[in-house]
Amino acid sequence: MVKTIEIKLPPEQAANEDRIKQAVERQAKRASGTLRDFRIIRRSLDARSRHPFYRLRVELFLNEAPQAEAAILEAFNDVSEKPEVIIVGAGPAGYFAALELIEIGLKPIIFDRGKDVRSRRRDLRSIQQEDTVNPHSNYCFGEGGAGTYSDGKLYTRSHKRGDIYKALKLLVEHGAQSDILIDAHPHIGSNKLPNVVANIRETIRKYGGEIHFDSHVTDLIIEEGKIRGVVVNEAEEYFAEATILATGHSARDIYYLLHEKGVRVEAKPFALGVRIEHPQSLIDSIQYNQPNRSDHLPAASYRLACQVEGRGVFSFCMCPGGLVVPAATAPGEIVVNGMSMSRRDSAFANSGTVVSVETEDLAPYSEFGVFAGLKFQEAVEKAMFSAGSGGQQAPAQRLTDFVSGKVSTDLNDTSYIPGLLSADLKELLPASIFTRLKEGVQVFGRKMKGYYTASANVIGTESRTSSPVRIPRNRETYMHEEVAGFFPAGEGAGYAGGIISAAMDGQNVARAVARFYGVKTNA
Image 1 (cartoon, one colour):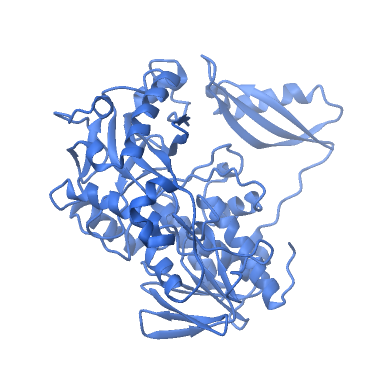
Image 2 (cartoon, one colour):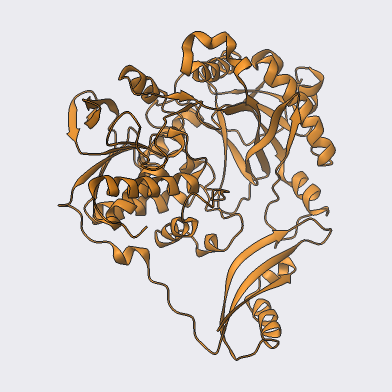
């Protein structure tokens, strides 16, 4: 018999296997049966009181031993001679679609404009230290996509979209710590995720899939309402009965290409704002109600939201113990993002703080039609760049100066390697964004005492929360309604928002491709 119980333990006991075992055994004595083994299936931190504690959900195995769980990869077979499926993009949607195709018995052929994770690091150093942006290899483009070097947070609310456990288990089978299977807010870290991504690549190749880097898809071969294949680097043609497009939220050229080819795209909601960086010790003291964080507590995080003048203002992609990084995908723009290493041991905490963008904001760009949102994004990113001296220095203000409308005489220390420059963000942000951010951060300060402080930097600009464009598809078939065999997937298509939701969407699309090919699946 298997029985589920919940135990509560202070952090120092929750970190000790013997203390966990003792607590489990105490509760097991109340159950009928002999405890053979136990397994933690959920772990979450409750820090709402003055004394934080962990909640552990535990399965007790009474009078029976737990069954060993088979590895997903054990079901994989060689697909090198199987029907081929083109995948554009080697991010989570593309890679998890490829794994699903292999499991089903189809051959994925992946094209990515960027480089593999190891080679990609050189381009990240270039943007950090030399202000050089490679438009094909950066924090957004390259193997693993934007998520590889932006913290590796695996939390998602998309429980109805797919099998979260399967996606997490595949990450574990490729080298991630097994803790992600039980943590309420799982996280891998940008120092460890590249190895996991590289292992996924090797699995795809081991079982007969193909992966081509430095392979920019520059055209789609569409004939008589059906996609026939793709053109790579303006020269090479590749053909397949189906193509999965998983290019991420920043591949603007793909949206324009689709429009030129007569493939319908549509505008979608998005948000834009800034990234706010606090000392991590300050966030810890606020959230844990104690002057110094215990060694057994993780770097504290927060999630804040409010309504200002009918718009949502909210924190986004909060990175405790993290770094602010330059995420531009082209020269002449400033875009920032956040990331954390596995230990989350940076002295800084940062979070995107953004405002929902509405149709009225896009009025100056209405001549661009469905691409008004893209032009709005670009205009803000270029304005931020114009405030500097031609590099990746980001305009910034102390939080209190941001609200009072004063250019900061000096700025706080920062994790942002290219450096910050004092600027008046009111002059660089659209008025509708600035005024709501100004009010929003004051509301946050009232909700979270200590948040509103001169010790925080406001850094521009957080503009890639999601794409302003969606590639519409049929809800049942996952296929574009006007182009047979064409399957948009992931964040770039407008159907995901993070590593796990993109991975699950890739899996769903792969199964839809199998149905399109007439291949049976287990799902």
